[in-house]
Length: 177
Image (cartoon, rainbow, N blue to C red):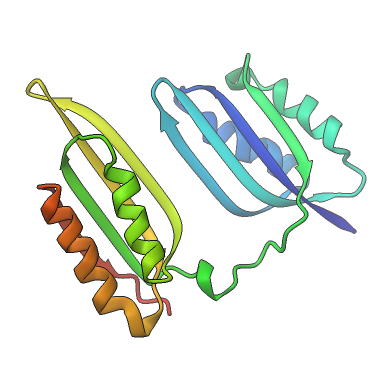
C-alpha cells in the first residue's frame, strides 16, 4: 500500500540538485506525480506530490533527503497530501501565455485579476525579473485553463491589459482541452 504526500524542498541552487533528489526518491520507492522546480534568486524550490510506500514514514523520508550532499542546509518537509492528486478539468492547460516588458508595480496583480474575471484557472506561473542594459525587465509565463467559450474574450482582455502596461503579449494553445 502507498500513501500520498507532498514533498517541499528549498535550498541553495546548485547543478545536479534535481537529479540527486529524484534519484534518491526513486531509490526510496517513491512514485512521483505533479512536480515543480524553480530557481528563485540563488535558491531553488522543488515540490512534488508523490506516492510513498507505507513502510517509509514521513520523518524518515525527510531525514533521508536531508542527508543528500546537494541538500546541505536545505529545508525539507514531507507531509500527508489531503487533496486528490489527479487534475480536475480546471487543472488541464489550454493555453500558454507570456507577457514581458519593463518591470512595474502591480503587473502580476493586474494580469491575474483578468484571468479571474473570465473563470480561467492559472495552472502554473513563472516570473523572472532581470536587469538588461540598466533597466528592469519582467517576463511572466502562465499555463492556464480557460473555459473554451471564454477563451477569445479572455485572451483579448489579457492582450489589452498588457498593452496598457506597455508589455509584449504572446500566447499559444496547449492542445489539451
